[in-house]
Length: 312
Image 1 (cartoon, rainbow, N blue to C red):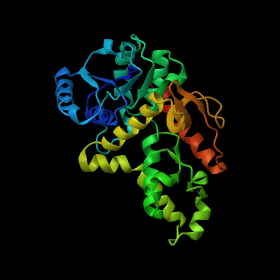
Image 2: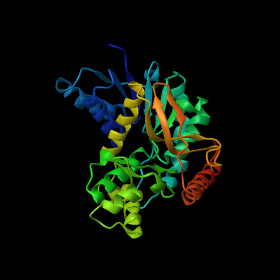
Image 3: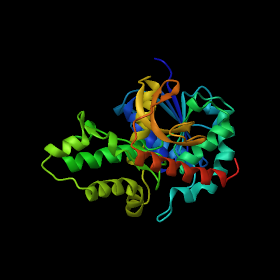
């Protein structure tokens, strides 16, 4: 069997949940957990290994940064968590300082692809590019993959359709300035505006805004109720890893460095991108309406202001 090694840096709630989901998926033959607290990582590894008889064979163990060597993918979930009432951008200085420490330790061992999950993910993806000096194709932020999934779920629930048949994107910042691309929503190949005409429910502008606000504020609600988000992001990460390890050429709204995308340059944000074994092979220029372009540019400006406020 070909070796498929995934290293996870950060064994907190997101890192541990992702490790569990990855183990169940059977995608990786080797999973290594790296954490500031080796004891916590050891506890997770013991727990995961006790379930190996129920899943496909894999080797799961505690490691250090040297175990990033020969990894197909390193997934970085390390960093300070988002507190109730705190925005993702509020985390920026604390987590940038953490990344200045850990990114050089990771890239010293030349893993193939880095996936950044810690928040604010767009700013930290940009920081990782600068700190690692990796090509842009090999540094991927989890971006709005989860936001897009939330959007599709809520639209499916509203319209009474399986969310797997809802095609829609959230682009821009993974955060308060993100943008819903209503112009490109389709349900089973039927444009959303046309679908509304045959749907039994009315869909007013107010209802559309309510759906989007639920998407944008979902993390705040989950954090308020249970302290952290972990299950859905764990599954979103499995989806990104799957596209890489299986060389699927899947279109995912990951965070990547953009240059001259609707006059936006030198910032990381989420747009639809084709992801395969080499990382991001290309980005897609979807047909945004003028109002959506303006919102995306505003989102980019929010991120640029934050990037300019930190030293990388």
